[in-house]
Image 1: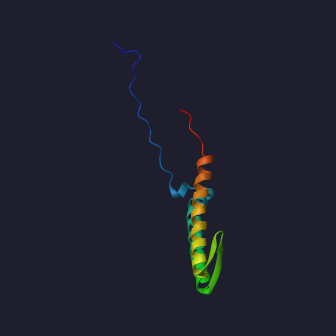
Image 2: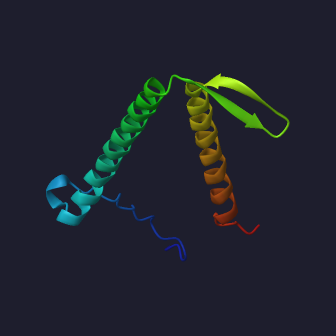
Image 3: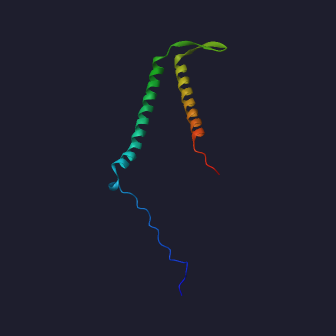
Length: 108
């Protein structure tokens, strides 16, 4: 007696991983391009830190800082450091807000 509607389960073939020998030139470029961008970002970051250190070293004199309600004397070094930190924090916050407002929204 044959069983109707029930067929033997066919084994699914697992997708074979693409070997590097079969990789196209474009695919290899994409794979290595990510590494290049990481190194470029690292170099730019190191250059920014070196530039910040040089700015601090060159600007050691005292300056008068005028606020809305008063003024004070401070070393120019602290103005450079505080400006760099404020710019870094504002950049992170801005990137977060832009990413949050432009990301794809899932519908429930």
